[in-house]
Image (cartoon, rainbow, N blue to C red; front, side, top):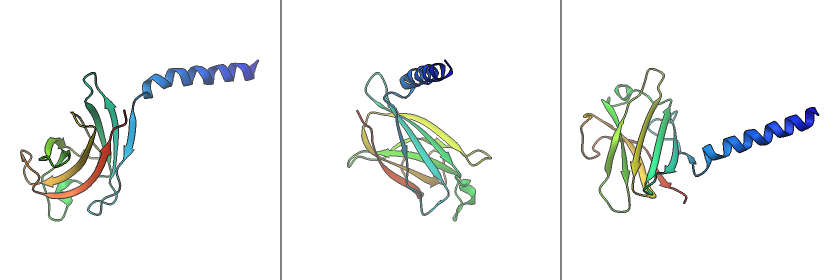
Length: 139
């Protein structure tokens, strides 16, 4: 009886958990030479219009003011093919050295990179590139 209950509980937990993860894609970006302790994880999805949803989570990311040379802010960029990089937002680091940024892009394949900038309102990457990776969303 206990074995049957445990098996049924496991099956129910699997069925409940599966819809939450369907279609989601989890990626980890390679470490950076600029900030080797930083861990950048991406949760990719697809919205109703077919756009790629990105939930970027950073851990162990140094405060930009502690970089050499010191900077004011981290900015996240997306660049597809030979297009101009598109600013996706500011990645704010909290006191625990974690940060999160959610955004949407129409691209399924793109370069994602983060720069440390002097100005939060920059419209093109000019500062130190702290991490870069290729992203390809599955169907």
